[in-house]
Amino acid sequence: MYEIIITQPNKTAMRGKLVPGAYQVGSGPDCHIRLPGPEIAAAHATLIITNEETVKVVDLNSPGGTYLDRRRLASGATAEAGIGTTISFGSYAILLRGPVTASPTGAVAAPAPDGAPGELPQPDVASSRSDRNPAGHVPIPMLKISGIPPAARSVVQEIKKHAHVELLKRLNLKRMSISGASESELAERAKATIREIVGELSVPLPSGVSNARIEQEMIQEAIGLGPLEYLIPMDDITEIMVNGPDRIYVERNGVIYRTDTAFADDHQVMAAIERIVSPLGRRIDESSPMVDARLPDGSRVNAIIPPLSLVGPSITIRKFAHNPYRIDDLIRFGSLNRDIADFLRTCVRIRKNIIISGGTGSGKTTLLNVLSSFLPNRERIITIEDAAELQLHQEHLVRLEARPPNIEGKGEISIRDLVRNSLRMRPDRIVVGECRGGEALDMLQAMNTGHDGSLTTIHANSPRDALSRLETLVLMAGFDLPLRAIREQIASAITIVVQIARERDGSRKVTQVSEITKMEGDIITMQDLFVYKHEGWDENDNMVGRHVPTGSVPTFMEEIRRAKLELDIGIFSPAPEPTEARHG
Image (cartoon, rainbow, N blue to C red; front, side):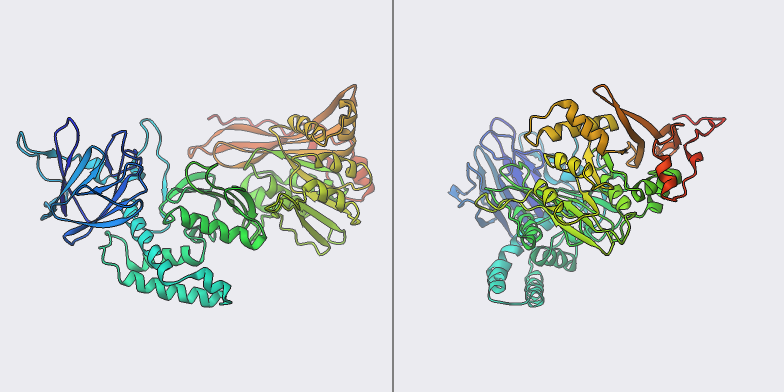
């Protein structure tokens, strides 16, 4: 334990005792030692306390500088300060009194008598940043992944930062890669060097943290995707959200959790992004600070970096199950029922054009993947996506993926270019991952010229909103078409709109299955065939409800009979109301 005295302008000096670890000094709310002066940076410096008689002082590129006995440290430099050294930050100063015997409780000592330095408030010195929360905010639950206690994470981060610097001195992985070293050779050299560095650590590890754990995290960051290596294999996690190096969140079973994992620093987050996008021929830098990509398993990745992101490099990964969901899985989840599943399967088989509408994260792509599995194996299927996500297993399949512009701003191949090109590829079915621009017009024209049975998704909050958004997207194609002409195209091309929504409890529900019937004047008429009826909430705050038919019958029942497909017309008859309705 190390004793320090903090002097501050116009206030009584404060005295405190610090256990071994890393303490961030600055004016920011997340700092362990807060110095709220205008000349103090949000993260000004770091003090690393060991069991030895010196303290390591790390300047964090602070504008005002960090001084040891009036000698300024170079920006970003590290120096050792011994007993009696005064560390200055603007008008504040920390005097190092030296190691002392820990009190029985391990907390700060008793208050000093009047006139002597007061005690440094314990929360400002050793509180964990994961425990802080604005007043009145419900804290986000913590999901234990790495096993490192939140209070020890800041110490581990400092150890990893310094170990990474040492790794770069001893081993240049990029140079070895250029020289022709294999991936396995690079991995083994990196692992061996990291073991040496971790074995030489002189900083005592916090309770609950082992050398093996630090070694594992460093290996993940040196040759893999860092803490993402923990999360990507977990099937019950559907979304991974990295908000800078030390704030990693996941969605699990519809609930957002903060994890106890972290990258060492911004450089390691950038390294993970580079390892994701480089094999795909994409890039990310200050001139192109946003990128869409995918993982080898098809999971969708978006990354955005400074100067656009103010919290550091940010990564969002929409994960997909290693085994794609089937229709029976969606029925088991309560997303739809057997009658809706049988109806949609029949619509796909008789080549009805279907649009899946919903908000972000509502499950549109998952449902599109399930409906695409109904496509006949003997037909030629062409999928067109911005970043390839669909997982179809038919034999006669061609997958197309858009391409962003190169560093010179040339070479872009858009979704619209691919849709137009697909018409020359003799497609039986065209599946577009999402309509979000002028390709909507080309898609409608294809549907109206013999390429029926196509599938796509669109962002909208209701079937009627989906049609309005489709009109807007067609106008984005750059043609000055009359609104009535656009609506006639939509009414003749699209037959079924499936609306899906993410509910408050995190579940995904098909809320409406609607049929576009005809044009009446300038209005497209629709009828709901199935709707989701909300009936309340159970004791676990999960939504209770059921999918019910509205009583309307599809106008194409005769086509279903001509195709010799069995579909009981009774599934469209309204079910009797339950005798007792449940209420939330």
